[in-house]
Amino acid sequence: MVDWGDPELIDTIMVVYSGMCCFLFGMYLWYLALSFHKVELGLLTGRTQLQLSHGPYLIARYCCLATLIMLVWMPIVAKAFPSPSSSCPGTWYTRLVLAMGETALSAASYNLSLRAMILWNERKIVLWTLRIICLGQLVYSFVAAMIGTQQQWDPNHTYCTVGIVPSAKNVIMALLIFTLSWDAFILVMTLLGIRRKQLQGSAISVALLTQGMGYVAAQVTVIIPVLLGLLLQLNGECLRLQLSSASPN
Picture 1: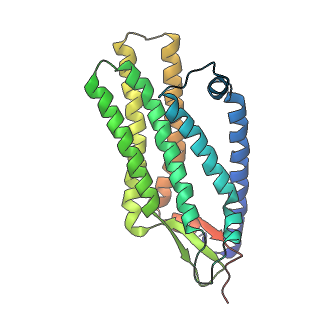
Picture 2: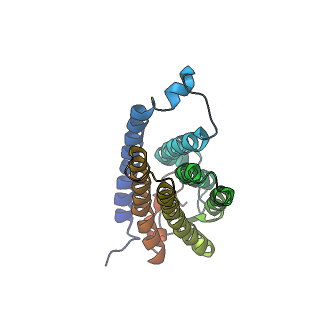
Picture 3: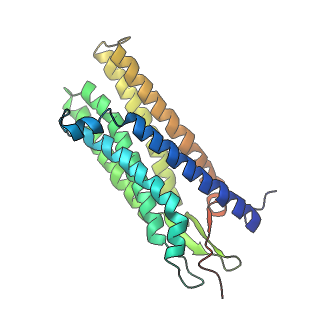
């Protein structure tokens, strides 16, 4: 049986984690460079007029970028803001990272729902229902990020445990399940809207469904492992930060 509390295993996990953060950061920068001409370049040069629909798209892209930057810099912050022994530095920073990530997630879901909103724009009830649920997701995810994270000093080792507050476990799980369900519902509403507009087989319907299914598949890939970690209570053992700047006396 794996001893998740073994310091050597924790060191290995953190090396892999740091390397993965840097890899994802580099890949995302490459993605931004390749897709920059689609929206941002036109906005900067004045060829594209800024519209309200650009908001969720830009927020999702650059909140995700900010999250990756903060993840890469997290070990540096831990050293830059040392705390006395038996305490953990950077709790505010961890919560900020999670808040930015959750904002990016909510904005991406809203950006996905814009397709359904356009297809259902004549039905005001459907339109406002989608908008209200998107706003609720943003508020709920932000609150969950603020109250659901904890850092606890381990007196037996020189690291802090970063994990889920036990009392907020159900809140986090509900958020993850809601996010999966909500994105799947948006995809269904998009499909129904395409059928309602009789756009089956058109280029725009193929593009909408491809984007929607790709986004939902990505969400499933990310969220399911996190849910399993919560159910198996592995998060508190796997997510550890070794803080060399905060060692016991």
